[in-house]
Image (cartoon, rainbow, N blue to C red; front, side, top):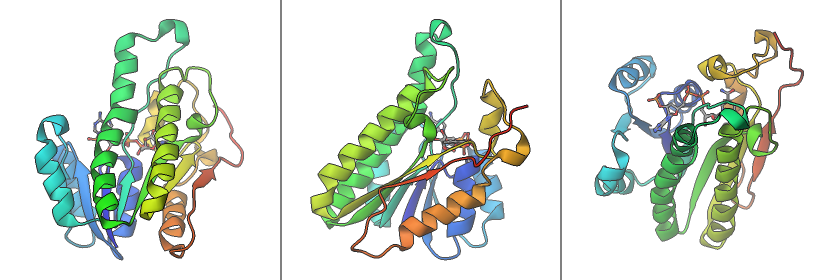
Amino acid sequence: MKIILAGATGDIGSAIALSLIDKHELLLLYRDEEKRQALKGKLSKESSFLSIQECYNRLEEIKEAFINFSPDVFINAIGDGFYGKIEDIALKTMDESYEANFRVPFFLTQIAYDIFLKNRRGHIIFINSISALEGFPYGGAYCSMKFALRGLAEVVAKEGKRYGIRVTTLYLGIVDTKLLQKMPFRPKQGSLIPKEEIVKAINFALEIGPKTEIKEIILKNRRLLWR
Ligand SMILES: NC(=O)c1ccc[n+]([C@@H]2O[C@H](COP(=O)([O-])OP(=O)(O)OC[C@H]3O[C@@H](n4cnc5c(N)ncnc54)[C@H](OP(=O)(O)O)[C@@H]3O)[C@@H](O)[C@H]2O)c1
């Protein structure tokens, strides 16, 4: 399959890229050149990369790269952690969370969706969080935007269904990544979800037959132990 992966240089994105590269053709979206070089060095074979730096000003260029690649699947693994109590969250923090967790993912998803719409087939996979299913303390900026992304996934699924577009969302518990450093409460290492489990879930969603759609996969920490 031909897969566009947004957020490929992140911890979860890299794990997905490293695992999918053997079986699929990938277009890896990134914004940081150093991180791109680091990922490139770890890949078992050559892959295409596309910078999404200044993406809003480069709409036509990014569109063209997507069209030329002709994807079957678009995966969004972009996002960032912003945590604070309601009374402390600055509007600037809300804007930053909106940008990373919703606006950029929406912008890129829309470009992929448009191609899938014309092709009458395609699969969009959102890497989301259990923070999109339930509010958590300190989650005013994070949960709110993850709920918004979940709303987008619901609409894309309903609008896209008749055009052969499948949508899958992975709602993840706490994964072993650097995002943990930003969280107000840190779980113990042993109770974190290994990144390999996410890759297994994505493969499951990719490999299901054409008549079936996996709408949601919820990966929860079996038992969270806090520090
Ligand atoms: N880690 C967890 O426990 C966990 C749990 C549930 C859900 N998630 C979600 O899973 C996704 C990946 O998380 P992760 O742990 O892999 O975090 P990560 O290592 O920080 O990766 C996040 C990715 O998003 C990109 N990104 C962030 N802000 C961006 C922006 N404004 N514009 C463009 N790209 C941006 C980053 O780009 P750079 O590489 O250039 O920094 C990076 O590729 C996120 O949506 C996160 O919310 C994570």
